[in-house]
Image (cartoon, rainbow, N blue to C red; front, side, top):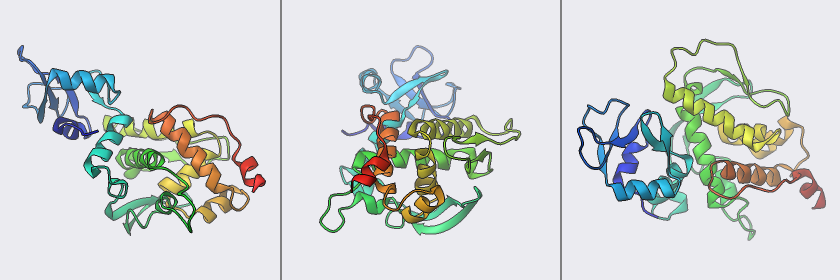
Amino acid sequence: MSAPSWMKRLDGPGRVLAPLPAGRRGYGVFPGPDRRRRPLALARESEVREALSSGVLEADPAGWRLTAAGRARLARAEAAGDFAAQHRRTGPRTVMDRDGKERVAAADLDAGSPLARYARPQGGRPALIEPVHAAAAAILRQDYERSALMSRVTMDWSGQPGAGARRAPCDRADAPSSRLDAQRRVLDALAAAGPGLDRLLTALVLRDAPMGEAERDLGWPARSGAPALRLALERLAAHYRLTPPAPAFNPFSAAGDG
């Protein structure tokens, strides 16, 4: 499904969609809650109704903003149905080291990602993850890049299995609200994956760690990470409302059956 041009302009920190001021008909994309500024783009009432009914907009105190489903729709539209193009980016990437510290590494952000190989068929076997799973991972990564974690480590991402991500003591009063919102979305997404799976997503999506390294760090058996990754991404996609909720499942039972 295509995305209107105003939706692309809405995809930015702090931007909101709101009715035009002074009794004018229609809606505008504004850089913030102040509607006295000239809108970045205009939207028709019919387009806004369609966006609300399809779940790509959510309420904001100043109007509406894009949901995760809206950002996924943008990614699909910009790629014109080309899955590879949806997630291909090149340039510097900030990745997380094992100790939770961040560093900038130059990389091919598509082919260089450990997650990318699982979206391609391997040796005649079908791809481990589907486009919707990759889209969910891309949303998590995008929120991580938008969050305050990119400029200051404010979380302990190295907790024990089941502990999830824990807040570290810090003064966040000076952090922009858009970054805090992104940080909250990252934590909510990892919590939705569940204990253990949250750490797997942190390793593969936020740290760009290879699967074997992630399995060793988590103390998991070899080859158990692949079914666990698919489950984690299914839960992530359900959290972002890209798919129905994933059923309860133990990834290690599947690994043992093989």
